[in-house]
Structure formats: C-alpha cells, structure tokens
Amino acid sequence: MHQFRARLTPSARRRQAAVALLVAAGLAIAPAAPAAMMAYPDPGVVTGSTGVHDPEVAKSPGGNYLLAHTGDGITLKTSTDRTRWSDAGAVFPNGASWTHAYTNGSNHLWAPDITYVNGRYYLYYSASTFGSNHSGIFLATSTTGAQGSWTNQGLVIESNTSDSFNAIDPNLVIDQSGRWYLSFGSFWSGIKLITLDSSTGRRSGSELRSIAGRGGGAIEAPTIHYRNGYYYLFVSFDACCQGASSTYRVMVGRSTSVTGPYVDRAGTAMTSGGGTEILAGHGSFHGTGHQAVLPDSDADALFYHYYTDSGASRLGINLLGYDSAGWPYVY
Image: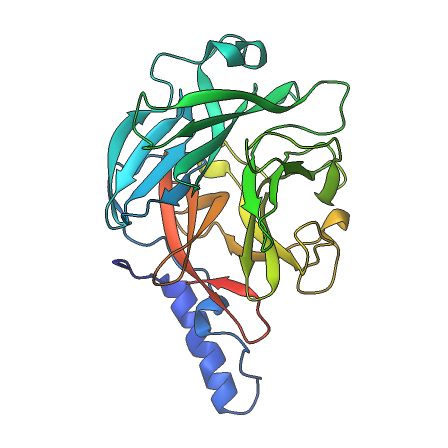
C-alpha cells in the first residue's frame, strides 16, 4: 500500500506557482507532463531501519518486500508495507571468502541485485575495491531470502585491469520473450549487457554488448525496466560515495529492444553520453542515485539512496509516472 506523499520544497512550490501564472496569462505553454515534473519531490516517508547504500528490492508472492544493499556479507531488510523497514541480517553472515581475491580480504560486498523468479530469489552482487576494475559479479540463490539460507552459485563475470570495463553494479532483466540478461558497469567504457542461461542464472555465450557510456566518465548502476513497449535503461551519472558532497543523479533512456540502442528524450544515444535526468539532489537530499525500479500494485516504485546533510546514506522511495510520450517522471 502506498503510504507516503511526495513533498515539494518551498522554492519548488514557488516555481510551479510562477509557471501556472504564466500559463494563465498566455505567456507560457503548459507542460506536457504533470506538475510534479517541474521540480523534484523529496523522498517519500519511510520508517524503521532506513540506513542503506545501493538498495535493491524484490517482492515475494505473499506481498512482503526484501531489500538487499551494500554491506558486510550483503545486508538485508524486510517490510510488509514498503514504508516501515526492519533489519533481517545478512546474506552471508559468516563472510564470503570466495570473493576475497577481489576485495583484498574484506567481506564488504557491493551493489546487490535481487529478483524473485521461478520460486526463488536470485541475488547478483559485486566484489571489488574502490577505484579498481579488478572486480567480480557473483550469484547467490535462496528459496526464502532469510539470513543463512543463501547458496553461493559462483562467479558470473569478472573484469581485470587489462579490461576496458568494470564488472560491478549488476542488474538482472528478463525480456518479454523470457530471455535473461545482466546489465552492469561503472566508469571505464560504460554499461555492458551479457546473456544469461535462465536455467542456471549464469552467463551464456561470450558476447559483451555496450549499451551506455560517457567516454570514460561517471556512469554506473544500470537498471532496465520494461513498460508499455519500451525497455527503460536507468543509470546514475556523476559522483557517489562522497556524503553530502555527492552529485549522483538518475538518468534514463529507452529502446524497443532490451539490447538497445537506447536513446534519451532528445534522441541522443546513451552510448554517446545521452540520458534524460529525472531525479537529482535538492535541498537536504544529496546524491540521489543507485536506483532500482520495482513494479508494484499501485505504480512502479523507484528505490534509491541519498545522503543527508550529515553525510549519512538513507533509503529513498518515490513512485514513477509516465507522460503522454511515455517518458518516466518521479512523484
């Protein structure tokens, strides 16, 4: 059940009122999308355990939410209503020694992606160190999602210092024909896409497609979401992980094929730096990004993290609407 409201800052309300007066006077053209697009909403109200980084969420057949995020052994939280969140332990409470070659011996694992499909949870997760592309993406599965119930299924893809890509920030997407793909990537040559075997969740074949990039610039955290004939590729641009100085922002492009090409609202290819901004930091909400999209009963829900003025990372949740041209906006 949707139990939060988007809140506009006073400056945002003033901008909306000014546009409304201009429209009424015939001096401006009314926007094609709802007024919420004129300024970014604050995160919706969430309660309980809301300290997260790189959140990803799945919904069980029973209607409960399971959230996984960056942390030692991959941290878990649960909710029954998408508003109040409780700690639920870790995927690997006893550590993950098989990742230590990528983490310099640490059990701190990054940017999980979690999906409930075929009666089980599939969790892809990253092992790396900051600023390095000696990285690995691994898979774990569980029928319940509970701490201690997860089985490591091994390495899916890795990158080394000789590669032009970085194997972190995975996201599973299942296309409308039932084919499985994994998007991933951070900096270097951008966002990549590989094919998976749906029976195992592991890599199938050797093809590596490029679907977005900024010429080595800051782009990461891909999420591909299908709606009404389009695959939408959401990514985060700019700086993460710098507390209140973070400049993360959510960008989007779309394609009629899961493999691309993806273009933004202006028609610029995402492989050429394209992307339409739909959410950025504002007020006391800094570095909004590492987004995930969950189709839910009321709307598509957008999950992300942001930083407070003190630099703490927190869970953000809003809803997505789609304008008359089919482009998403946050409310």
